Image 1 (cartoon, helix red, strand yellow):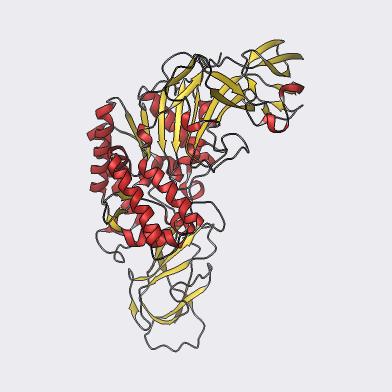
Image 2: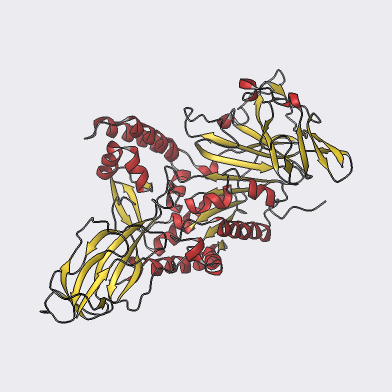
Length: 453
Length: 119
């Protein structure tokens, strides 16, 4: 038995001051840890110093919510350095300087005595509202954008954006909603962003309009929401206002164009455009909604409308009309989005998950009970028409199809995806692996499997 | 012979289904392929999460029969195995006897209806 010393690794902050909280241990004292396990995390904050150049703040939108998850590279029985934990409020806030090489604990192992650098999985989130404070754990909180990265190797940082529908949340963010499985499965340097479908569900049409929206249109939307809630038939409640605020923020933003700052051993940097954008065909609804006067597309899960309150429901009912979307409409929306993004970043890869098309809970013996066209009524026909459309899109625009339909059928969709959308851990892991294989095959750097040194 | 229509256990996780549409009027004839009713199943009570896992199904006749009694109305939420309706093989058959067997049906998943549907 030998003792391995655990050191903090390098994090270069250049002209900024890098502060950290006390060590927040996730692995208890005396417990045996696995190699590759996240044993602790600290909250980090980049602060201006005397040498900091003028200009926008790094992590301006995520100020105070940057976290460094510490990963042990070897297995062993853990001992915490007793003063690594500041205690109380000082363990929550960033009162200490980050010092590369600082010892935070030890592992009793079967291997040789040595010092090892703790791996760093970095993560942050943009609060949906400044009110949405949450310090409960690793990447916990109400974020309208969550990001994670590992930059422990030299080279270009592969950059992935996943537009969430709930189907993709666990695939990308993992079992604990903090990207640990994905970061543990890639070599890096790699960065991934996940944008949840709350309150705006991300169809191709919605994303395109977000990119194209002008300042004047943003102002019109803001004024329209405000005047309708103030003058509507139902007095808005607090949750109605919260929903309206989140919705206006989402409509005014554009996840594809958002700035992404990262920090690593070679200092802070702003990443360029996304190398790859991951979408799901589940985000393309058969009915969309369009604002009657301003004309913008709106997709929002109905349960959110109901939960927001009666004023929100009244506002939506009175101000939006339903628009049916055929597979041809979805195809055109995808083409428009892809062309728009590639006009600025021609190498951008698009990965699109198709739909699980069978449920295992039906036994159709005759189609006499359904009106033509069947794709407007029968769910599995509708899903297959959309899946076929994706092949046309792949030929036209070179997108990659993540074949969730085949993966689900292979594993057994009835067991692993009982409602054809929400998946259990096994199918999420299989879809995640397929996404990583596809990114690697498409030449997106950083997403290959980790090498064993 | 009387035939009973009971709510099938469409999904192993389901507890109840909501009656969304009734396609047959009392006394009407159904043939194989006739639509009988539409239901929605919300798995939220057994797999609760923010995005309610809801699905919509159509129950379709596989027998030639007449609807003689309807035990549910729109919006009702019967459990799987609950009696939904009685059919008979002859249009005027008395309803006093016990059902001889279940009405044969098939089940298909359908798209949700348009509108702000509570999932």
